[in-house]
Each structure stands twice: as C-alpha cells, then as structure tokens.
Length: 603
Image (cartoon, rainbow, N blue to C red; front, side, top):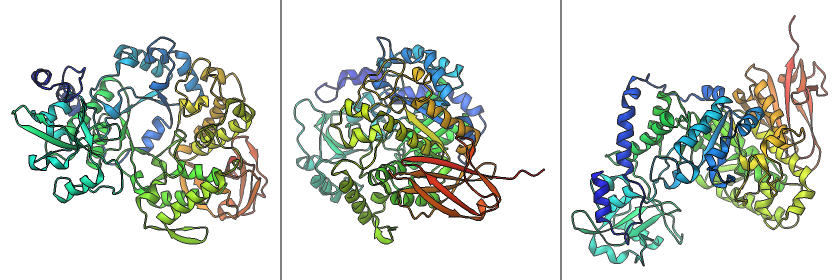
C-alpha cells in the first residue's frame, strides 16, 4: 500500500491517467503467489511434453462468448449467462468448454479481478456452477504482452522501485529530447514517427528492428516527467495499437513473468478455469506458464502470430491462423489450391492434432496470409509454377480482386458476405437464408471433422453479422440468421441441430484424435481431399467442395481395397466394390463429406 500512497500523492493527472485500483499489479501478484505457494510446492512436477491427447479427451469442442456483445436484459452479463437453459443447450449441442472473452480484459489489464461492468465474483461463481452442472469447463485468458496504463505503468514513469523494469521502457538523455515528438495537452505520450525510430535505433536507444515507411510506429515518447528522485525524464516505450505498454519479458527482475504467473494462479485456483489461453507471449514466458498450468492439472493453449512454425510450441494446443484465410480465398475463387498448400505446410511442419480450428472469427482480411508474410523469400509451387511467398501472396490477392469485382460466384457464409459486401441488406440475406445455412454448416463440418479442437463463437451459433454490436443467446435476435440457442434445438433443420449431428459424428469416430496423413492430389481445383487415419486405424477421407458445381473424383489406393465406404453422417454405404482399390468420390456443390473405409469384420 505504501507504493499506492506514493502514487496518489506524486503523480499529477496531467501526466498519467487516473486509476481506480488500490494497489499495483506487482503487489497483487506477490500476495497471490504467497497464498498459493504451499499448494504449488506440494503439486507433482509437470510433464515437459504437451498433453494434447489428454486435452482432447477433456474438452474437444469449445465455445466463446464475447461479454461485450451480450444483451443482458438489465442484469449483469455473468448473472444473465448463468441461466441453466443456456448451459443445457450448449451441452446438448456437444460443447465441452466455454470461454468468456473480455472477463478480465487481457488486452489492457490493470488488475487480476473480473471487470465490474460484467458482474461480481459472486455472479461468476453462480455461472461457473451452472456450467459444472452440465460438465462444461471454463476457459481463461492470461495477460498478454502488455498491461493497461494503470498504477504499475504510472509508477514506472516516476522511476519508483522495481516498476521501470516491468516494461520495455528506455530513458532518453536530455540532449536528445529534441528528437522526440511534442506531447500536447493532457496526453501521456505521442507516437514516434518511423524516421525518428530509425535515428534512435542508430544511436543505440532502440535495440529492435522496425518497419520502414509506416506512418505510426510501436514506439511512443512521454512528456517530461518528474520522478520520485526529483529528476526529470523523458521515456520511450513499446506499445500495442491500444497504446498499452508492452511488458519486458526478458528483464532480469522477471517482474512481467511474476505478474503473468499470478494471473494464471488466480484463474486456475480462484476462478476455477481449467484451460488457459496464452495470447502472443514470448517463448520463455509461454514455456514457464504452460509448465505452471500443467503442474496444477490444467491445460494451456497459445495464440501466436507468424508462419507455420508458430503453430508449434510447448502448450497443449495452438490456434490455427493459417487455414481460415486460405479457406476464405478458396470460397471467393472456387479454387482450393492455396488451401491445399497450407495443409501441406502444416502436415510437414506442425502437429495437426494440436491445432484449434476456430470457425469464428471468419472476418479476416483476404490479405492476412501469415505464412507468406512471415517467410517472403520461401519458394512454393502453385498451379505448376514456382514462385516466392511474396509473389504468391500478390497472385492470391489479384485472384480475390478478380472474383470480387462483380457479383460473387456462389454463396458465401453470412460472415463472409458481411465483410466483403457490407452494403448487403437483411432482405437480401432473408432470400438466401437456406443457402447461407447450408454453407455455414459446410464450413462447420469441415472444421469439426478434422483432428484437434473445434471452436465456434456465440456469433456463429446465432448467425450474427460481424458488425452486430449486441446479441441475445436466450432471446430474440432480429438481425441474426438464427434464433436463440434453446429455440434452435426445437427445430431439426436449424444450425444448432445440424451442429449437434456433426459433433455427434465427431465424438463417435473420435475425430479429434485422428491423424491427418496427407492431402490427396485432385484434378478438380475446387476440391480439397484430406486422408485421415482414425484412432481405430481405419482410413478415412475428408473432402470439401468450394465450388458451385457438382464434382466427381476417381481415387485409387491400397487403403480402399477390401473395404466398404460409409458416410457416417447418414450411415449409408457409398457406391464401391468391396474388393476394388478404386473409389469414386462424389461431391455436391459447396459441401463437406467424410468417408470411412470399413474392412470386413473377421468371424
């Protein structure tokens, strides 16, 4: 509390924004660590290898609810969502784990507590009890690479105690202040242009690389600030797009790691969240936190930017950010060639079983080709032509523009249409409701029948547009394609009922535990065919047709010989001679199909 008192007395509001916390996060972290230290000490040392199979047994189907978008009917969001009807519906669909996005606002966090606008910790416990009744686990989100501009950052700028070591904070000598931008009014800082960043880099202040020709940089400069020692300083610091300062994860004080570890303990042991998301953390922090989580019998999932290598790691699972943009491109162009390329890279460089396939957000920009951006000089073969990743990205963007000029070929999902054609009206969507529902289920099927974790959002479940600000999971949503969650389950032709059937097949065949063996060459550019090996060693094919025409592909393999071909969704046999090694795959327009090859049972 001493540091909190110093803060309130010494930091003028013209320099730092007011904060409502009573004490810094670093002090809160120390208290949490001391509270749980005996329990952690008694816990069995964790396995050094990711526990992916155990996580897939524990919770293979995830659901995310953005608390900012929930219509609460006058209650707190947490109390409103504690309605048992919601959890009954989610369990009936087949959901095993739920993430409450924004519960602690990890992007600009200044405290470990639940955000007051969503409810109290008591409200949260009521919700958690409702989830536990239906066997649904809760997912937490660890602090990211930054904190908000709270007490800790304010004390860092005043050069108080260990707080400057928390952040990527660099003091600039007074003789070089003229290089820094002016900070006007009551603002705390101003952005440093890239030309100035280049100069500061050459002078030895900024150790990291920077992107040239960018109007705004990740570096900000503060106004002159009088410290606790009465010395006036100007600092520069790294920040995210929200202006929140980045933590310094490699500082010898390890203050950032102490805060993140305490945050993890709070989620696991106070909030009872057994799956923790680690959002874009550096490798050293991710490894330490994943081991801490594993030691306390929890599971970890990472979200990283970058190429295919970023899908690897020490966490138990990792969000796939490569396939969604490739899938979007495939539906825009009705060409699955780039989608096949991404799958080939994943099979070569990552473990497909540890991937989290999130149906939402599908609002990615068509140019978000992370793998091609990350390794621009790497060579790839595309349509029988070899080109660099940078050239390929340009080619793919040209194809998108070409196909989006007039009316789109085929139908895209609600989310895709809303992003690519924002002027579309509800009347237009009403006319295409059946087509959109079919395609939405096609995408959900394709994502759900792959190895790894399947995840969808509340927006997906209701068919909400990306720009829709509020949704009601239990009431009427006039601007959504589908009705509320419980209401959909009363309609066998609804999205939720279709999803329920899809997840039932996923569970019966243990598809989450299957192995993605290879992509299969096809003469039809609108077809992507994946060969799977099920947990019981049976071969299977998962195919998606991204075109508006029916397609047929004749396949030959020794895996097909002496088997029956079964469609597990319908339970019907596909046309195939038992002894033949040939199989003819027939695909309807914009469809997904799974075929399991069943050998004759021995007597």
